[in-house]
Image (tube, rainbow, N blue to C red; front, top):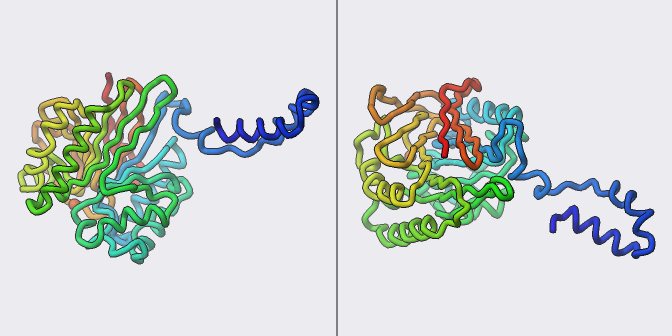
Length: 324
Ligand SMILES: [Fe+2]
């Protein structure tokens, strides 16, 4: 029962059955409190999509390297467009993560940078390599400090309802950095089992499967052929294909990219939250690449998924739509 219904029913029960008819209209008018259930996901938006979110990665640099400009533009975009939540693709805090849930970097690189009212929504982060250099669990614990920072574990799943009867979106938020280290193989094996099981057991009404991890498995940035990228490819490519994962969303290279290697999965890289790195154009599996500060904006309906790459001035640099 929604809270609004609960309030209404409780009020009417207390008044007694004989008074219900004349008082009902008054009781109805006294219900002014809307909860998130009344207005959250599932609402039909004017653009025809039921879910919208922004994605940003590689950002936490105390506002420098244009982090503050990208943050300001995200706030403007979320004010002017429907937006349900924000995904962070990792490397949330440079240079070496946070040491605790009380680390001053929470203030300098997150709370005091993404200040817009429109950004006080749920944030769903994953960890990057820099986040692993201090205490990665501190970012999980910060979920108890902040209302908007939602990281229940170092890897986790989130199922979101598009609209009643129109299906769901399954998000798997994964921890890719340990995949690069032999000594972390037990943790990685456990995580890979969880990824496979979660995808295999996805309910029939899941329309889109989206995996978010920090490291790309293909890129046209500086890491086009490096150990990180090749290891992620070796570890994850078959999983993406077997389970027909629609989108892999990552960061790590500091640019905006849409990559479509052979196979089912589209990859988007949104690592342009502060410092930039170069991109190579003309690679056959790249549909778009830009070494430009910015973020991505996703709009999802049961049969279409729209992605926009937006720069720090609010200009849409690239737009694509996946359909099914
Ligand atoms: Fe990284």
